[in-house]
Length: 335
Image 1 (cartoon, rainbow, N blue to C red):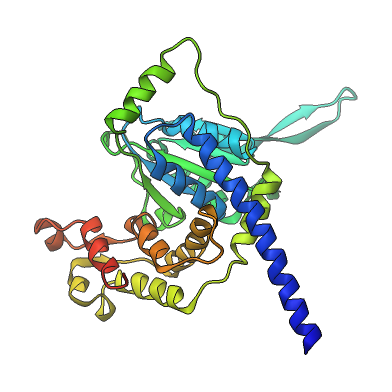
Image 2: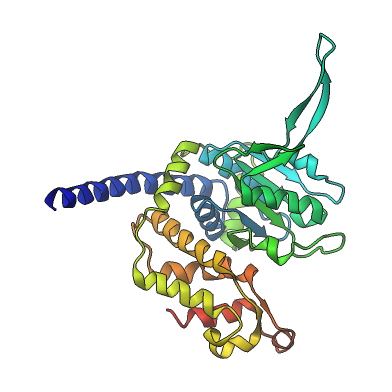
């Protein structure tokens, strides 16, 4: 029994030491991104939490709020191979996934060779994802879910780690194809990118219009990131936090668990939302140098994880209700 107890203590010590290293790497990455992206601390935090959780994020904001710059700098800071695809209505699945081409060798022998598309990156920015056709959207979203693609009957595994940060402009809806609800569920978080405050915008003016612009520096490697992702899944979660996650997600669905808010909700999040929240609260704790999540983490991450996974009834929208308002009331039940 004593030997068993010593083994458990050694394992706990190893996890704590690994957590200290991972937390310092993650905090250095957050600071490095913050040196070039001003006034978007919450967006940077949520994007890093998404990646630490092993997921994908949908960034929603008007043009010019540094969404593209954020992804480029995240690739540099995290040591990832980053690529960008500008989604347009004429973009084909093969433009993202890749295609087989017929080649003839010097000896006259013909054969097909697979040329990988931009999806074969560790960090892919899908710019204005709602501008592409549903066929192209689904090709990317299937790759996001399965971590591999199949072309001409041959499977091609995607790099590890593999993350997609997609952007969407909430203003221009003409000529767009909104993502179906089932596909939105593939994103761990929907991150709202708002206008910076006055002081942040002042810093933007000086930093981006001078002779020299700050450049991000690498704070970790792809191996460091994967080690942190494995560690996130090892962090202990208390029963009170698990209960808070279950209560919150189940109350966001129509039915008796939602109480008085139930009649406002047309449809709600699946168990995938609970899984996403379970991973994200651990990642947030690690990013802040803590080794176990709290109910405060659940409350902080409830809206970005739930809001794209639920919808209000027509009558609720007509009465001026919003998803953010309903989630705020649901958070009150656990906090």
